[in-house]
Image 1: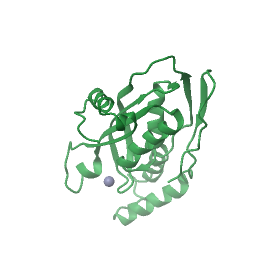
Image 2 (image 1 turned 45 degrees about the vertical axis):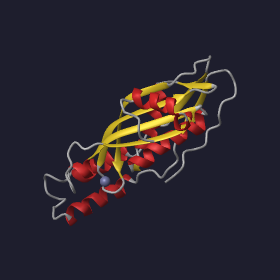
Image 3 (image 1 turned 180 degrees about the vertical axis):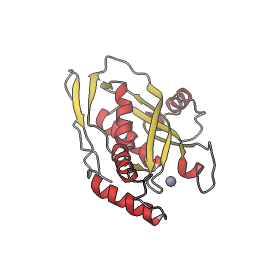
Image 4 (image 1 turned 90 degrees about the horizontal axis):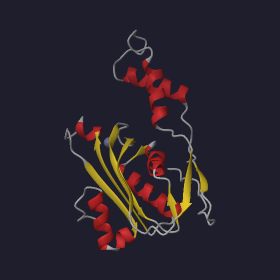
Length: 211
Ligand code: ZN
């Protein structure tokens, strides 16, 4: 895993724009195309057949798209005294399970108790996407989003819940179609204060007994 570039916490009262990129190795698309052709052959298929000639290029392109996200600017603003929970619920999330290279999809609920800065709301989804476009496990993805917000926004508390269905669980193995996996990561007051934590889980549509 590569770590996201560190971003300095803003100290002025002006809107702060922080460029956020994750440094990681770019996808080698021609090598991926070659590998897909080899995989097709290993699966007993003829990659030269008329139905499959475009498949290596398409598969490599699909993986390149799913594994790379555009950089974005994280804009924060001075907090003018708002001290309640800010929460975005049902943010669509899609990622690739690193064990089977199959998608997992679902929704995320991301909340924070603001400190000195607040964040443009759409940016919560951007932070999630930055980490989701990678080979992942749901537990790590959840933790990475919470850790990143903790480090870069310095809120009084942060909570992330992800509910997702994993195709590797619904299409193969136990074939548990429709089963959802829920993970959560909490920092600060959302971890330590029972009332804040319960409010966060209630607004997320969860009962909130976990954590
Ligand atoms: Zn899997």
